[in-house]
Length: 69
Image 1 (tube, helix red, strand yellow):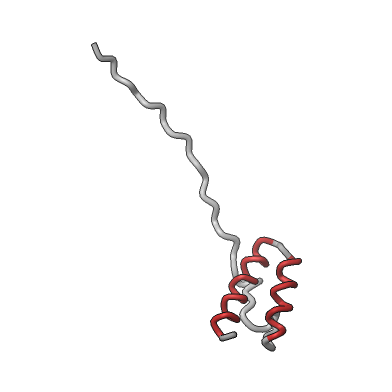
Image 2: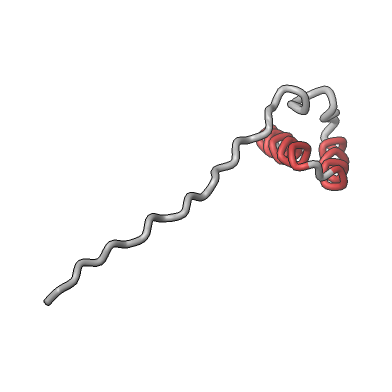
C-alpha cells in the first residue's frame, strides 16, 4: 500500500470523528497501525475542524396559474 492509501484512511477517520462513530474510528486506527501510523498524533483534526454547515430546505412558492379562455 502507498502513502495515498494512508492519506485516504486519515481523511476517512476524520469524517468518522466528526460524526461521532467511535467504532469505525477504532477500525480505521487499527488499519493505520498496520502501516505504523498513530492517528491520534498524525493527521487528526479532531479539535481543529468545525462542524459543517447544514443547508436548510425552503418551501417553494405556490405556482400562479393564469386562466385561459
